[in-house]
Amino acid sequence: MNALKALSVLLFFAVTGTAQPAAVFRKVLTGITTAQASAAVTNMGQTMHIAYVFFPGQTTTQSGIQVRIEASYDNTTFFPISEDITSAANVGGTVYDVVTAFGPWPYIRVRSLTTAPNAMTVWYAGHTIPTISTIQDKPDRFIL
Amino acid sequence: MTLKTLLLAASLAAAIATGQTSQQTVFKAKVFNAITTAQASAPLPNIGQAVHVMSVFFPTAVADVTGIVFRTEGSFDNTTYFPISEDITTATYNGTYAYAIARCNGPYPYVRLRYVTADASNRPLTANYTGSIQPIGLVKLSGTRYIADSPLAGATVDGPGLSISGNYYVYNRRMTPIVPAQWTSRNLDALTVRTDGIGYINLDIWGNTRSYQMVCTPLPSSPYRIRVHFLRLNGMRAGDNPNEIGVALRNTSDGKFVLNYIYLYSQWIGGRWASFSSEASQYWNNPGSYDSQPIHSFDIQDDGTNRIWRFWDGFRTYRNFNNTATEQQLRTEYTTPDEVCFGGSGQNGNYRFSTTLVGYDVNPTW
Image (cartoon, rainbow over all chains, first blue to last red; front, side, top):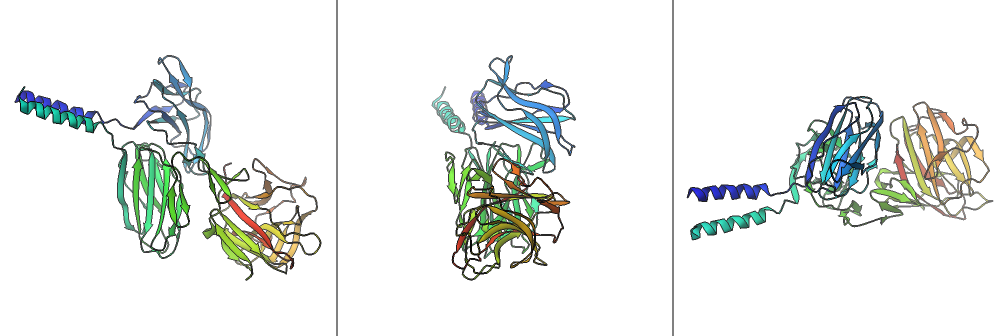
């Protein structure tokens, strides 16, 4: 009977544990001003990658930055898979910008290549199904 | 192992197999239920969806509901939210109720709906949400119904324009399609026909005196930049009393306006008008022909001090005179406008003429 109970518990967790999430989110760089790269993000086979660059507390355009999404096959040699974000404007009261990349890669990270004028925070979002075609720049928002 | 144990293991294994199918869609009915005030919802259920569909209903409405602002917002920390959708500003009446459906994309840890500007008539609003992992195409208004495109749909024809990935083009010029309900008719002759279509307003103008017949919409707050796009008129004739078409900035209180209009084939005249039928004086009168395209785009800027008139060719703005003062005045010169108008003067009694307003942009970023 004890063995049966143990088996039931194990199988219960197996059922609940095998549901695959569709999205992964991670704050990859927090309040940075220096050039650096994040660690590789969690990879669940996502093929759509989005990086959001924020300047919390700022109200004016932040220029002179260079942030991109990069990929690698060996977690050593990385190459860019997105365009660079080179500035972040005040969009609807928040200073931020966004860039997308697509494709399945074993290792994905976000990299800031330059110093930032003020503390910069970068979020990464990945999704298993590509749903975004273009990013529309509006006066007060980005429409994906 | 007993038979009972085997059966139990088998049923649990079956449960594992079904449990591996992840949830694809999440619904939240009545995110807002009969509300009348501006407010934001709590974060919506999140299964990692990257497609968000919001629907708003006004069950007691008996006509279009306008002047509202409703949107979807996203956040990474459940504190700083930002808009991730276009605003719903009109709910279309379908004969039974007024409603609107809109879709936006993007995976976010936190998503909410927000009623930003409530209906001035306090009609109750109910809103629902669908989140999907699978993509859907653009949701478009067709008559009085909302139809979602297939996610595989490419460029689609919408009225006079082409929609590509959410952007709208007429004659290769990117613009915002006209929402006819936002344009009020002014001084239309009884024999003039106004036709509202998807993304456009056509004026088929009749007249035999020099009097401007227009459609107008409120201007944004200063400073601003607007672009007005229209298709070339027909029915012009050199010689006797040519028909005219143009764009005006008008004051609804005193009825005065400042106007830039096309005269004959490609001559542009700008000036002051005391009323629809009374030209007071001119800013410029260029007899040269410098615009032969079938579509015209006026770019008018109010920088907080000056009013600046330019043309836009789909790529850049430009002025025509070396003396920049010619196409620039103080923003309050002659009158302080509160609406922009498009229309024409059908003074040639022999010829009707037709012209179509196809786009209007407020503070464009392109």
